[in-house]
Amino acid sequence: MGLGDGQKATDMRRRERFLDAASIAVLLAVLVGWILLALYLTRAGT
Image 1 (cartoon, rainbow, N blue to C red):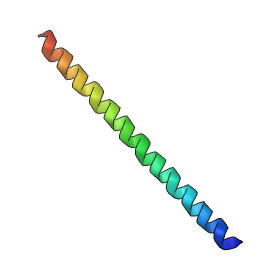
Image 2: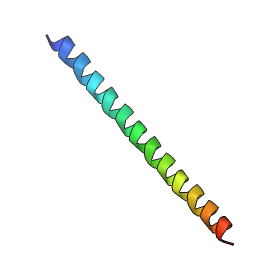
Image 3: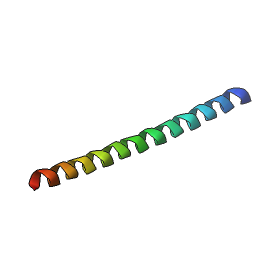
Image 4: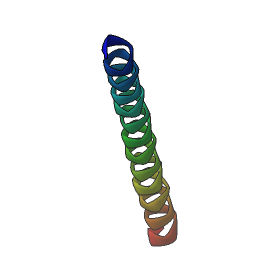
């Protein structure tokens, strides 16, 4: 009844928060990868 619905809502909220953290981590990884690539290319170009 009400208790199960509340549990399902908290599970959904927890899953959303995990997805947000995962997407942020992926964005950071991509950003760091691009920065490292740019540094490598500029260093190789000189």
